[in-house]
Image 1 (cartoon, rainbow over the protein chains, first blue to last red):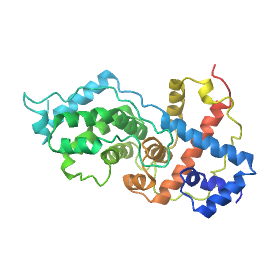
Image 2 (image 1 turned 90 degrees about the horizontal axis):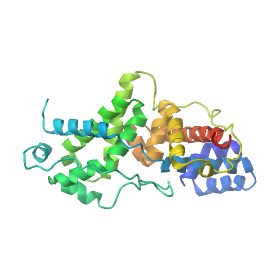
Image 3 (image 1 turned 90 degrees about the vertical axis):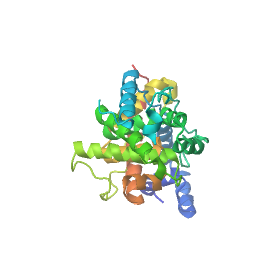
Image 4 (image 1 turned 180 degrees about the vertical axis):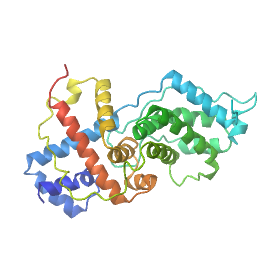
Length: 79
Length: 229
């Protein structure tokens, strides 16, 4: 496998979604390619940073407005 | 049922709105979602049986996350609020039809994603396509090939990293952002993402690899520049 093949399969590799033979080929390439190893590591890290990011909490005003609307609709109150 | 629950003087208040703690996965993969807590099936069963406190807990537990999802998809605050509201309303209205084939949160995410997508399409008709094949792979090759040194965690406070990531996600094209958010933020599986968006698994994968690489490029460009000013 060459660098292009690694990049094409990087997502499947990170997800553990590769055929074992293909995975072995990919890891053999990583064994001697520093750039691809770095890209895999940084992509994995990017996903982790994204996954760990916290949602911005709803402001009190927005939360209250939404809940009022929610209750009004649930109670079928058009006001 | 919910009319009965939330109307009437004796009905308990719907809102005892507690701050939601975002439960992140220490290892984002394998999927599916780790945001779901073990008591969810019992809560849903209680909600379906008319327990207002259980409904209350479900809303409190997921509203921030659902709002983030609808915000991430629509990129518009007003649409995000409407989509979130309608998603909860539809979920409650159809709770009788939810039989636990998937997790409640996954089911709710699908409803919310659909509500958000409808609004995005209304705002940007013919502007993006989630299922058109992507020709070639010349756009895949990374350009940024420098180490992040020192690590972002050593350079930035957590809240700053959150802001940086949020900005970069916002800048992604719709078709990449939506798939990335469902897969890596909401932690839906590839199959669940495909089902939620009504597209093929291969369409999800081709967009996901590009979205992840684009995010890496953006973060690399940012973090390799060193410490913030």
